[in-house]
Amino acid sequence: MAKDDRPADEKYADGTTYTDSEGKKHRRVSSPGTPRGDAYCARTVSQKRTPKVKARRKAWGCKGQKSVKRAAAGGKMGRGDGVCIRGRTRGRFT
Image (cartoon, rainbow, N blue to C red; front, top):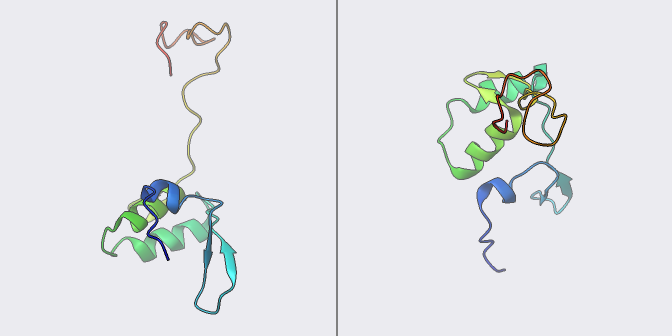
């Protein structure tokens, strides 16, 4: 079998599939900000930081032992020129 040279963030991203030891395919799914996410983060906080663990902890939104939902980036774009509707970005892209 050929080695997969993709970066870990792509290889272990949400929606990708893997095959378990019995040959059954599974889809990778994360639920940041939920009790299930908190359990995952608490379980992996002490694991060795391999590229796979880093990628999966990022997908689960782990901050230490807690899982947090990702916040929406910046404000709502209105005019298409990079200026936030609320005017907080002063022309910078968010």
